Image 1 (cartoon, rainbow, N blue to C red):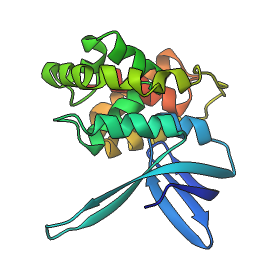
Image 2 (cartoon, one colour; image 1 turned 30 degrees about the vertical axis):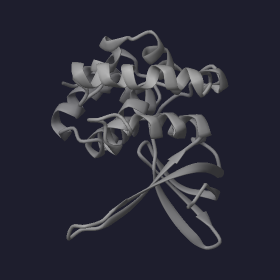
Image 3 (cartoon, rainbow, N blue to C red; image 1 turned 180 degrees about the horizontal axis):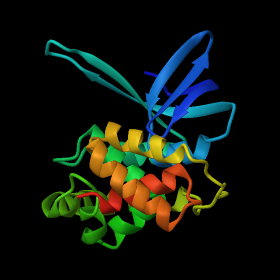
Image 4 (cartoon, helix red, strand yellow; image 1 turned 180 degrees about the vertical axis):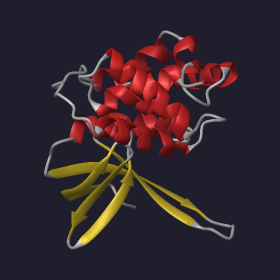
Length: 204
């Protein structure tokens, strides 16, 4: 089992990071939170969760990367909930920070969870019921740092990058582009991950 990968960050998009170590480039699927944490760095260390799907014609092996052990643990907890798959778990962690997610679960905020694509009322309730005690007993929320970071000026490429990321997350390009353009007209200085987070709350 791979615990983490540490090396040169050779490629980075809001949904994927490529880390080269010992001459091998590893492509890891990431959340927006991890993207924010490693953006602008030459090197990165990502904690890994491996997903191996077999039994069909198209076997697959996917690596998910997380900037912190706490985010990885939240991801692993989410995928234990009935109705929450790998993609949905990443969508949740792209829509809110680990600390925000812990707060949403601990306060039983169903409305916030329902705002995430693919999460209905029953799934939101299951997440809260199944994980509320676990995040407390495991002390995940206590280990999470408060959200911070710099907000840099974005360039004109942010629209294309945001639309591309939303498309990879399962949204149609045309509606995604419209929402992204509207967001950038309202707040032209937003970073790409902020645009995507805002878009995730608006696209239906």
